[in-house]
Image (cartoon, rainbow, N blue to C red):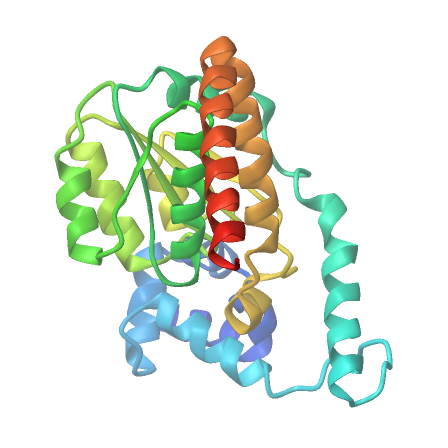
Length: 271
């Protein structure tokens, strides 16, 4: 093992919690080595790369008991504790959003020839929700569920199209492949994520960084809440609707008619 790799490993052992919250580049800077040295050090420890090391460290740290307000050990007590933790984080959702990035994202979505919304894992339901809401506000959007299908659809995008990718961690390999595929054709890649420095933001033209309900990368892995993203999506779609103006109002009127018809049918089925 090279001395430079040993310096990296010494940092990992000395402060694993800090390493979990650091990117490979940040760790390399702390150890005064190249990023490639960090990767080699991880491989020397038996991991495929740095992401796998971070996950392993997070899993080990998760075994430690974290102090929390005592609501008791009942199911309701645990629910109250979780709600309190979530509620405390909600005011920070927009704290790291950049106004110019948000404005540009809205403009791109409104003006795009085609909008494709993609996500994998726990973020997948958010992609479906975002695509449906955009369509219902007058901005038709497509969503593809299958991972390979996502890459095929993204690769067919061209300049003038927009690809919105939702990934809480910004490190999901399927989402990264989709981002590369969309970029190849010249589409604008818009990331909705919780971490400003992540592989996904490096591949994206526009990054909408939403402060997560989880307060760290470690907690993102342990709890993976998507509440902050769901709230942002609703507000973002409203902004798109406002930019669309009269067309959005027209489509929303049609949506209300459809909802009304379906509610009437549901009532009739009970008679």
